[in-house]
Image 1 (cartoon, rainbow, N blue to C red):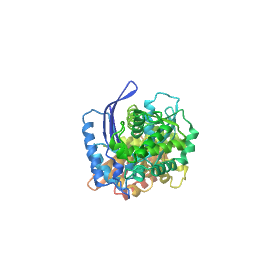
Image 2 (cartoon, one colour; image 1 turned 60 degrees about the vertical axis):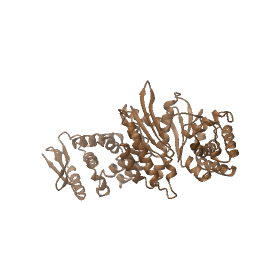
Image 3 (cartoon, rainbow, N blue to C red; image 1 turned 90 degrees about the vertical axis):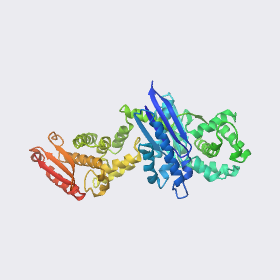
Image 4 (spheres, helix red, strand yellow; image 1 turned 30 degrees about the vertical axis):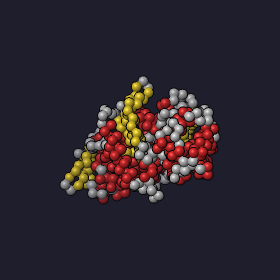
Length: 488
């Protein structure tokens, strides 16, 4: 059983799901419409009140999670926490409240997870489809064929900024609505040609806002009753005639969600006009189902992060045999260090990418590689995880002053040590003679101490090993670690 917590710009939501018979059965849901995006001021700072509400909501969610025996929980945060300048203040509070790490995912990763949820719900493997998800702070547009995504983009426009910019006082005028649609079209126009080139057999709307608009249109027989451009314009005309959000009383939507619907409607009309979509089908699947599906894949050892690393290796021409050998050595040495909190998966991924920077330049390749590891599009990885990859790739060689603060985490320091020793062994061509090698990192009164025991004859067989180890002694010494290599 898995749990997905979605910290969206409009609402915080929780799904608990249990896979059975090839489907994900939702056994518990929770939703709090906290309107986090509304707590952002003009300087993109979240208010104290908004942060307190967010923390209280996650405390309530934790109580729900504690009722179940869960195999894995994933908490993802989207646009508002991507753009909030004081997110670093709030995130530790949210993690303490929910009891799990909070992952601020990129817009593209959000789009991929949304599509995983949609693909899970639609059992048509060869269908060419377009998916649009209008959230509180951003809109994700995905083109795909069956389970395979061909194009995914996140656009910085959502229901909250549209409502705040064009309908802040609740009034709905033709001038304001037309300006809102024009603003939306401008956001999508540069990418419109790319999506039209993909083509689609069917188009879907996956967000709560889209489902709310579809419900209002269907229940009130507006236009042709579907999410067509004609029906959307008919709904627009009703809103213009009413003139104010408070006057809208048609069934199908709660009164407090009407302003969100108005902003979302302007985005929906804009994206459909710009991409040339005549009709969408609202579908009750998206980000949370995608997160649950991703957790299930990881549990079944089909982690899409593995595929992302291998795709990056191919893109930058990495020697896969050397990369895999380095990963194997690093993992073996890391286990010898007996870490508390294992960083083994990220260590292996970093080892596989450790030479990726050579595609830019041999000089300072580890620095180029660190930049690529942090900024490359790696599906499945969070910003925090890519930051960890960056630290490991950057720390693989050279001075350690550049990652001094990271080494305060003892288990991360062990991962850095394992990777550095693996790289040394590869350089010295000693990678086949490690059976008798012992590696330890111990806390002493005078500080951390690294002890490396080498079997007799290894230094004679691999003469370049000695100068490499001398460099290691100096590098670790600069950051307060003792380093002793001896032949036993």
